[in-house]
Amino acid sequence: MKNTHMKESIDKAKILVEALPYINEFKGITVVIKYGGSALMNEDIKNTVMQDIALMKTVGFNPVLVHGGGPEINEALKKRDIKSEFVGGLRVTDERTMEVVEMVLAGKVNKKITKELSLQGVKTAGISGTDGNMLNVRKFTPGGKDIGFVGEIVKVDTTLIEIMIANGFVPVISPVGMDENGNSYNVNGDYAAVAIAGALKAEKLVFLTDVEGILKDVNDGSSVYSRIKVSKIKDMIYDGTISGGMIPKVECCIEGVKAGVQHVHILDGRVEHCLILEIFTKEGIGTLIQN
Image (cartoon, rainbow, N blue to C red; front, side, top):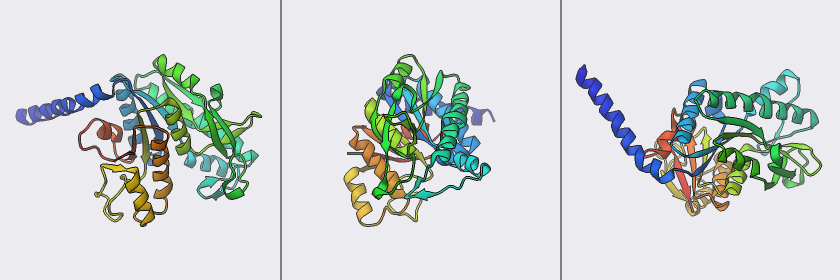
């Protein structure tokens, strides 16, 4: 029994030692994390994500959290008998829907995440993309189609985020933007994360998703590329290896690299402690995308 306990202690020590070079290498860097999907809905996973972010902050990273909230918005709309409609994966957002979107994202979801992260012992503040005029947007009309108050980011003002980071806070950002007339717009959370990471010149951008990473074989969940170049991803889209709902995910990753982010990660947000496993271990668990 004693030997078993000793072995467990030694294994823990080895893990800490393995993490040390990564902590030294990445101390002081800015990491933008897009948080949504299963990681946001599963309470057990959510708790480990909060712990991971708290650890990252404690060892000297500057995490910035951008969150989604689609299922909560769907639920809130249903309660009000407002129909959810999507065009090309984007929510058709009329005035009534936008009121609910802003209330849920900037209110309920944002404050819940802020509280949960604060409970891990880090200074946290929840803000909306309209605060500090952070997300400047214009109306987005995909293929010329009017889908209401859906915004395309024109400019990111990082002043407020930088003030928060400089004062030791972890910013938790809801993807709601504002146009030049003061109208609020629903912004795709993935694109908001890309734009914010690019504007902050973040060293890392991490997408927590509902997939294992980029797969060599779509029928084999263990065939994850640990590293892949943008050119290879484009080839895989062209030959159909990457298809369907995976295309917008990897396109966001490519946009992140284009925006100047050195390391873009796509991780399985359904795995406990996925952030620590990817960033602080040799093998990692997801896919690192580079130019």
